[in-house]
Image (tube, rainbow, N blue to C red; front, side):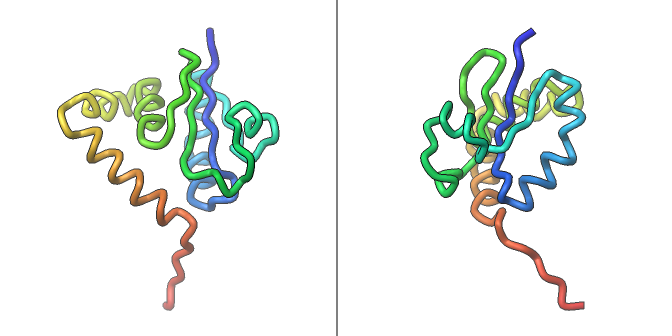
Amino acid sequence: MNTTWLLYDEECPFCNRMVNMFRTILEKRNCKVKPLQNKTVMNILRINDSNDVTEIKIIGDDKKIYGGAKGIIFLSKKIWWAWPLWALAHLPLTMNIINYIYILIAKNRQRKAVCDI
């Protein structure tokens, strides 16, 4: 069985929370998790600087590289309860909406919410 790799920005608090939340689920489905800032990963993806990290990357078991929202959709096919997201992404315009939401989250992922209470 081929392995899928989830590559994430370890400098991002949001990314770390999401990876920690889903790590066990993904590992049960033969998905390995590594930070994009790992030297080997940076060499494989030809990333020169950790500042070049703008989105998650998935190296699928099909050996293709998926980025951003396409990566999320690729992973959703592997999890039975997330499969509806994969199916919805194949309807007209739905992938545009998913991609838009991903971009909004990615632009704001480094922000830290501060509660004044």
